Image (cartoon, rainbow, N blue to C red; front, side, top):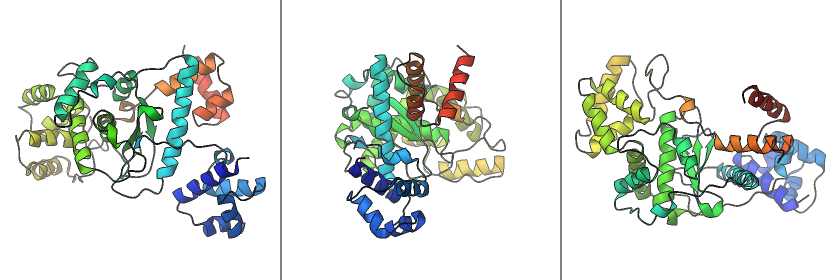
Length: 370
């Protein structure tokens, strides 16, 4: 039993749940001194004690024994202090280690095809940088991106959808030196799929434009970098030539339908479309009030600024669905490794973070269709 690993994991999970040492001790039925000694790695606790601690931390017992690699080249910023930051980074580190392990045993490592562009992409011309990346990926000047996850995975970027009940965390990115490049996107139900897609492109921007900013110790957002990443993401997802063509073709529609049609084509939010109009000074800031007034008249419902129009009660029938942001490479590598007997069933369950029973059901599901 590695006492330091145990101590670090208990402290990390306790802090993530905002539990004091006294509160956890009371819940687990042990003394505060015992918790303090465990977190200081002073003595080896009994298994019964660890089982009680794991139960009240809402984690599996084995979670307390896993060594966690500390990531260094990470861009993980937020406007708010996040008590769950260390837990997120721990999970990402384990996922990256598993991902790279699967790639190695299957000999399916992918190089980062956009790496040569980094020196060419200038932060002073973000739109051009987005265009260069699109061209490198073989996208036409008017072509929508139908599968952002597949596109990023094809270019050598690992994608992890991560559910976290927070509207202050949309995503983070990890540089190649730490097992990436990778983007981790919050897919919490209250965050629209449009926002998830945009966040993936936003994190790609950081990988391309802000390599010097990948530092685990930097936690506060840089407003200039965030604006640059937003501008990159908007033009990466919705190139100006394509936007102008679709916007002009929809000129006979009213504003709400016109915006929704273009946003649906390019899989962006209505806000991205309105921002593009503002960017090119086609409209002024009054467009927000005008759009919301027309939306209210159409659907008899106000549109809060943070909310994307959702496909609830036909408010926006053409809204994005969960399947529009779906990664698959990690699961496919796991399946290949299992079918080639390179990993055991229990190891597959561990990698996919599921039970053995769930893993067996998944195997049956895979075997149903060759």
